[in-house]
Image (tube, rainbow, N blue to C red; front, side):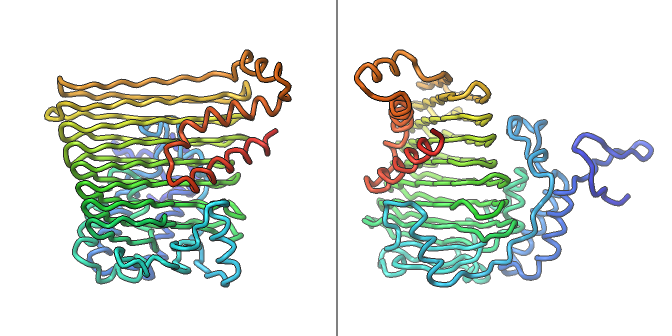
Length: 456
């Protein structure tokens, strides 16, 4: 039976006793895109095999939909009615490239150590290779004959094809950054990975692999710029944090109407590590950021801050699984959401405490500020505990701006719009405080302030 070109997710085709799920137009287009691009995708024979396995798994599963528990509130099959063609990967000129770097995080100078990608293709690298403590490369240039650690890590992640969007990333990724930070090194300047897109509708898949050595310290800024035209982005960052290392990982996504951003971070933490990610999402479109964090060594800390700013029918989703696989680790998650004008947001946070993970300390909090009556916030915190000696908890709130606080500010001569903006900025600021360094933190605050002013 041929695959139907336009079938909704519910119906199936029946022939005798067999039942075959019919593919949507987008699912069919994605599989065909892989077939057309397979020969030109980077990677040796070892990776080609993984890519075929991944697209096979995706073909069987299709895009996740509301019947998949982890995607209950973000029905990707409904959002992605059609799949955009793969972006051509045209490299911009030097002037345009500089403008993109400058626009990545206004106010925080990221030009010193950065790598720029355009339409999923490496464009330029400035300053990173000059840092003696870092071995860096573009993934597409070394993936044919990678070092042993890189092949092992990419193969480990790519071999897990149960998650459809991760399988799709394995099948289609074209390029990304590879960073290997030496043991005991402290990188003083933030390393920026900047991803930009062209002015035509298209789809992009990228993969970053970052290894941080024992007792090393680094700040990584991952910026995904708002495209000039609708884009479908699938990006995955693999992070291996060595014992005693400290990593701040700031991810910024600015989106536009009609775009879909699917981001995933897989972090594995060694003993006594300190991993502090911060994620900010603002603008329109559909954005989903997944985090999968596993504690592999004792006395490690994971401390997440997140700010989601949605408007005009946007849909922002942050979903994570924190796996306490060993004893005596700490996890904290603080998600702040501000919504207006039919915006929707989703928070799903699962903390798993394994049977041997005694002395676990895990807490999560999701808070939403609803600036319009037509907004929606879906919160699903979960605790899955199999150990006895633990301290775990979660909470979730949603509310409007407190009118008494607004009145208090007005009574001191502050205009209504400014009073509301001050309260919203203070609300989001608690999460932004987790970002580092100060210049990056200030730039993020300025972005939040600009978003508030644009909505006034």
